[in-house]
Image (cartoon, rainbow, N blue to C red; front, side, top):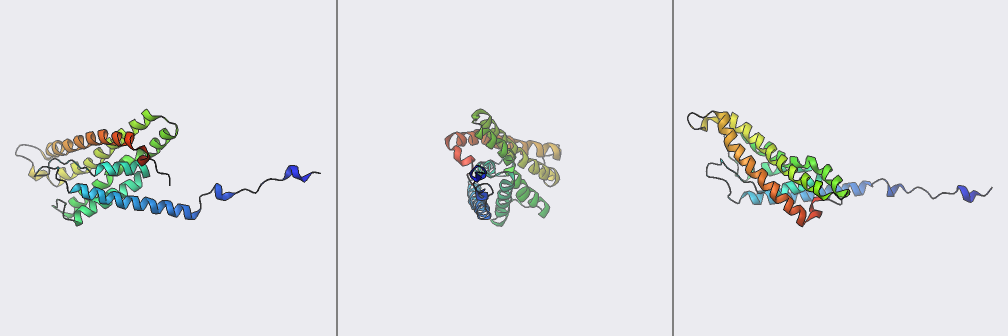
Length: 210
């Protein structure tokens, strides 16, 4: 019997299963990128775009955070947002009434600034199938999700902690909804405009190779 007919090449598992070293390198790259993005977010926080009483806040750091969250996913995106919020407390950029308030409005709320990354798998799928219109819509909705998610926690903080600052005759609910709703809408609009512009200009930023 001719054994050549039954001879096969040995299966190269290294081509199928990622090596532990490659996985470690991927995690390291994700962490390095996250550290850089957190630094950029903090730096952008020093640009004065909020009103004197902090009732309106345009948060430029949400732009790089949004790109990173779509590039790496929701958990890395929220982790970077969490670090961003902590750094603002450490650097004295936080408005502090009480410990629960500052934790809610900075580490927690800023973490949800990366919540747009929940659409990262959808974006990757649309890109792989070369459906640019659907990919662009995913980017827009990711920005809106990020802004609304973050300011939901600012709204809660306004309702619970800042209600005593409401003008006479205005309920804490309406006070928080008006001021935080304005910021949420403004930031959602900013992200819905800026993220698609960046997506069109530098699409590789939104698709990690590692």
